[in-house]
Amino acid sequence: MDDEEEESEIGPATKKAKLINGETGKPEAKRNNLKNPAVDTSFLPDREREEKDRLERETLRQKWLREQEIMKAENVEITYSYWDGSGHRKSVQCKKGDSIASFLEKCRQQIPELKGITVDSLMYIKEDLIIPHHFSFYDFIISKARGKSGPLFNFDVHDDVRLVSDATVEKDESHAGKVVERSWYNRNKHIFPASRWELFEPGKDYGNYTIHDRSK
Image (cartoon, rainbow, N blue to C red; front, side):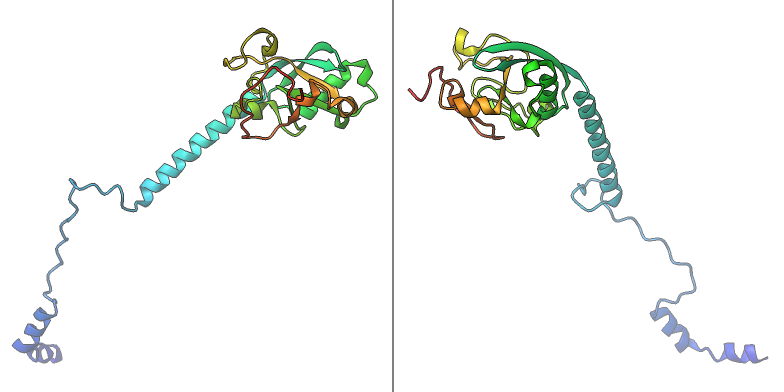
């Protein structure tokens, strides 16, 4: 009885108010998708697309890192000349990822005169540049670094460009580097060829190479 009385109290005015407020009693129809498929929205933020791009970049990065590790593990034969005023050519097996210090240690073990010398007392001279011990062969390969007379990254040996041809012509090979005692260098750094040697600096342009002693 009370329910009937309550329902009867809902007059036309109350029903009109509900209609105005959107209370129709009917289920709300789904809104139409207003996105125009012909409009380029690639510039808009898209979390799903951004996550996909991030995963692809990470996959490529991991692949590149694996390839670099494989390269570093590759064997390479380094021909060098133990220099004490004249050359004594030898060769040693290294990894491309080996540091210059590791390379010099192997050289030291091959040369009887160096058995009592520490690696810190040895120098490696490549293309007239003094190569710091912390660099690796991989560093020069990947950066395609150049010295005064040719590339540092290619350790194949050919005749010294200063003796056989115009040094301005690009060479695919480089001649043997020199392993030198630091004490010998300090005694002879004012004399050619040691007078030409200088410390390697990454990114530096060493300019045109000449075959003459600059001190003359």
